[in-house]
Image (tube, rainbow, N blue to C red; front, side, top):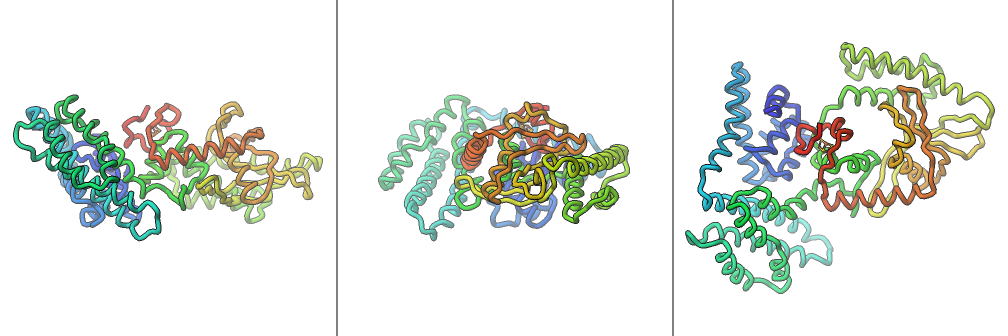
Amino acid sequence: MLAWTRLLVDPQDAAAVVRALARPPIELRQVDLARVIALARRHKLDMVSALTTAIESPRVPPDARERIQHFLELHKAASEALDAGRPDLLARVVLGAEGQDRAEDRSKPGGERLDDALGETLRMMREEVLASAARIGGRLGELRLDTDLDISHGVVRYLELLKLAALVQRPAGQAVAEALADINVRLLAATTALQREIFQTSSLDETLLAERSEIGGHDDRVRAQAIAPREASSLGPFLPRKGTGLALSASDIETYRSCPLRYKFARVLRIPSDATLHQRFGIVVHQVLERYHSAGGETLEQLLELLDASWRKGGFDDGKREHDLREKAGAALRSYHERLGAQRSGPVSQRSEPVWFERPFAFRIGPHHLRGRVDRVDRLGGATSEEYELIDYKTSRPKTVAQLKDDIQLSLYALAAHESWGLEASQQAYYYVLDDLKVPVPREETDAERVKDTVLAVGEGILGQRFEPTPSHAACSICDYRIVCPAAEV
Ligand code: SF4
């Protein structure tokens, strides 16, 4: 109900639309959600408009179109109720549809519920077969050694589709186990040796029989198990691939490590989310510092003028929170300027001079492509020195060295400096701009290995589509996807 209320008030609220689509009575599959979100991004549409476009798209399978149509009908009825100032009607439209769905289901006898479950599995398999046909067909022209294997997998999926269709239409009163044995013999007679092996090692039969014995015919969990490996692989085209690996940034790695499901929402499904006030504030501070240094800025006045200009363009309101943040930014930049002056004076051995800003890097770890930018690189100890410090600006609350124990961002930057620029950084630090606090993070000999192991493990998790949530107050309280997430801890 919360999601519906939010999306009716603001059709740009993509997270609320995704939540309503993912839950009963719509239950749009994740891969279809990803297609709709991609459509919205490509055509710069809000999600509701993208759904209207999606029902005309040949890339959206028929079943998904039906579900989207149902959503749009509900949306229209709910919008009319809202416009008429009838919250009672609105609640009836939204909650009524869910209630009706469940009530209809409960009223059915066990046998009918079993056939509903088989029918639903058949429907999901049908979509999977169509999707895999497109996938396998699309790769036939590639020069590969495992084309036969691909085709055999496709054929077996089709045979499994036949199996489900035959089960749904088995004679009245015949048990699933009995029908299954007979159908398998007939289907196996038509297979090659390779297809036979794939067919016989599939877990579909096991799941169908478990479905029957465990819950008498209608259990989403069991059905999802039957389709899960296939459905999971269907998100493959949405992974941020580059070559045989992934395109990754330090922030991608951090996001996956904090919660794999959050990574999936942000980087695989790419659910649009509006930047929070604090995020916009952080962007402005980063921009001001980058522009100041790039323009060879020297004076405090230049710095504060840049803040004025960026603040105006940032579209901030006149509210108290915005006013307080503006004051905070001004004070922080004064401290920044003072600190800069201090580090440029004093004995040569203790001086440091910023030499690069927002310096880009790109390098590989295993099959993965790492990209990013380092906010600032300082030369330590005078103009001829070859000692460098990598600095990352933060506008969040400061962390201690102990709290940064498992952090890999700066160590990844140090590896990037070595691999991408041929530069050995001897020091690295986070600079918490708002608190004018620099927290040096000690370098360890094992840093590079730790970074590589972490990147490879994260890459393996993403390519294996392991996106189980790891909720925690710390992660969920700053997560943009709480409304979509079934595991949010708030
Ligand atoms: S709300 Fe929590 S569990 Fe859900 S995706 Fe975000 S961080 Fe993960």
